[in-house]
Length: 69
Image (tube, rainbow, N blue to C red):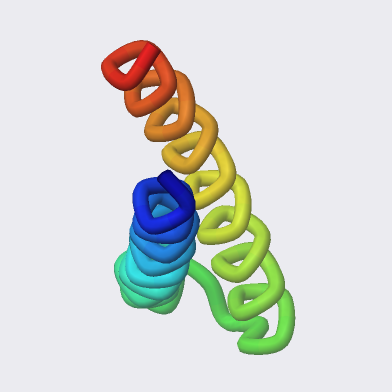
């Protein structure tokens, strides 16, 4: 039973980290083509990555809890 919970926590963490980094890189490249201010670009891409990662994490938790219900 504990193994299942541990697996869910680890898979959630990996999913959120990979998604956040991936979205950050995608958004960073997109914003570099549009704007000049590098510090503002990085901050905006970071915020977008975190936001998207949290949203995907919540959706993942709802789905997994619904399945294991």
